[in-house]
Image (cartoon, rainbow, N blue to C red; front, side, top):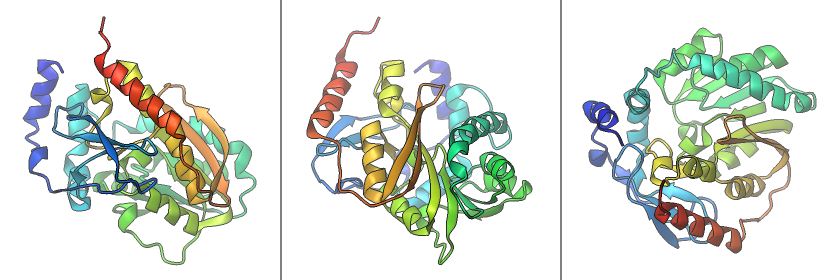
Length: 303
């Protein structure tokens, strides 16, 4: 990390080490307790170890901040930290241009499938400023609800005429409500309970509904900069790969209709519909290959 970037991050005064944390004792995907320690710091140089499940290959921070600590983090630290890392202002206003471009691209991806949906209720999990939800609502005639833990971003979504909920999806009860379209855009890596969230989505989505979800592909992230540590960051409790994300979806009861490698070569998107849950996991061979590749990247000479 450059001295200038380091100084910007230190200047925030955020004491990650002092934040309340909790250990991860079982894999969120498969339940295994056999872990491999991959890294000992994240891209901000915080002491944030990342572990991998030896059985399925899921990568996650361990220990990680508690839900309350993450709530405070998103309330006032997250955007300033990302701004300090990139050296430019990134906040609820400046991100909206990028979100509009993303919304147009993703709407084009799901358009061939949206006609199969009979209702109009849409839920955007981690919907930020509501730009994506508002675009989808206009394009497809949907009634949008946004849930996000960042109050300033939720306020922007409210100004767009969307129903809003401030908080973490893991802590909110939608009761008997059902949604016809659920979108989880650039959010799944931020969740504290991916398995539980997808199970909840399966319960609240209509049987002819549509789920859109995308991931930051861990392999693409560490191969891009040839650094595993630079792919790890405290704002992402989880790090998904194609095998682990597909396993999550199948185990939660979703069928994948289409997969898309985004133009940024970093994100992978999935368009899904409700189906039957399947007890599938990545193969042991694919997990071994992932761990070997990580060790190779960590130890190969850099030009």
